[in-house]
Length: 406
Image 1 (cartoon, helix red, strand yellow):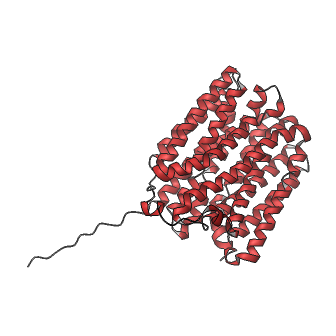
Image 2 (tube, rainbow, N blue to C red; image 1 turned 60 degrees about the vertical axis):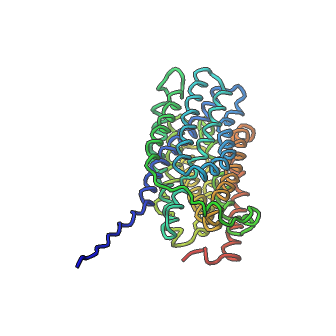
Image 3 (tube, rainbow, N blue to C red; image 1 turned 90 degrees about the horizontal axis):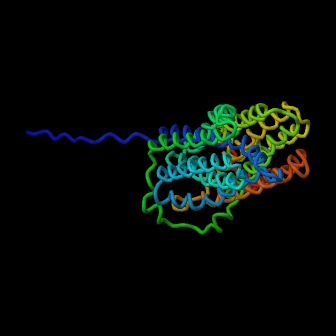
């Protein structure tokens, strides 16, 4: 009698942990570039332009193109997949770096603005790293996956400002040209990492499932608070951070002091990511967002207390932690508002709104600082932060008490 042996293949290993590690490393490289740009772009603009009130325009254009590219980037990745889309974004970043180096050599403010705008398109693609992590994680791991990917920014907080200082005079006498060469190399390294992520393209049934119109999705109280939290948290951060290096130089501080403050700001932004996901699961996204709001208000208080390095340092650390809680809390909340078939358009709409307000903040930053001073920049953030606080409390107590915590 012949015995039949059934051989079943072992289940495929869960790729979500590997994806989180690779996406976190990729985000570390991307955010290193952002931290470098955040430190040097206002200074390069100031160096190249005659009207100094326009110094932050290249950075503002970068934010504009993040906003303009969010929807096309999401729709493209819906068709070609996350990995291919992310690699396209890094190639755009490499191109932007080449243009900025050329512009600095030529002393062209317009060329530098064009390169900065392309960096915005590059940034729009990697902003979806956090959503890509959520898509491969189960419900129990989702908020931690988002948070852990964002923790890659800790590496950027240490590496970025150091690279900015190292590369400032790398191609002397063309100050900061070497900085943009370094950013291009970071894009190349990112492509090598992204080649190994394992996120399947959406199945046809997910793409063709029942979809609600954005107007219906956007009326959900949870969606409103999720988007508002991410919008205000990011816009406030951009407004204050963009003005900080110029405000510090105007107060008599050195470039290395500004780089150090930005470095600690980035640590404030990303070190909490190691535990923000746990806090969201334990206490709920809404409570985490509320703490982030309080951190932003505390930042304003510290910034208004003086213009020594200590005040800039303390205010920017608080600003970073506030951003982390508001942005990650808003992102986690957003993932509860859409169906699989709706995720591409909802994520795109969310980031379009977020970076739309960030763009406004970036454009206003330099002009407001030039016309009214550092105190005015800080006073300007109070009203939107208080609106977010009120909206979150409204959702917390009136509409969804079950999202407040376990």
